[in-house]
Image 1 (cartoon, rainbow, N blue to C red):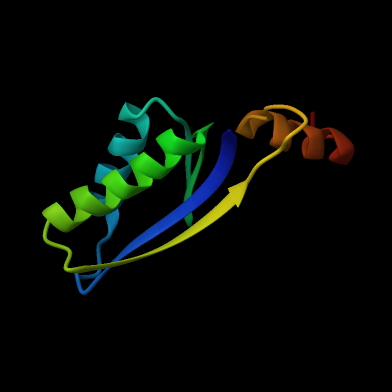
Image 2 (image 1 turned 135 degrees about the horizontal axis):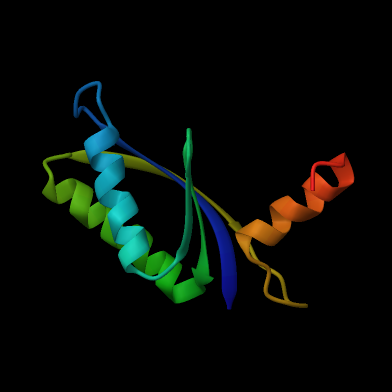
Length: 101
C-alpha cells in the first residue's frame, strides 16, 4: 500500500540545536528511496507502507545512536484505495484552485 506521511521527530534532552538529528533522519529517509520534502516543522514523505515504517524506525535508531536518550515523534498518515497519489500532486491540486499553478 502507498502512503503519504508527515514525520516530526524531536529528540528530548539533547540540547537546543536539533539540526544534526534532523539531518541524520533526512539522510535515512532519502537513502530509503522515499519521496521526501523537508519543511520547517517536519518532513513529508511518500512511498510503500513498509518502506516508510522501516525508515521511521531507522530514524529513531540513528538518532538514539547519536546519543538521544528519548525521542518523541508525530506521524500523520494518508492512504487511498482508488489510486496512488504523490506529494507534488496533492499540492498542485490545491495551488490550481488558488490560481497559483
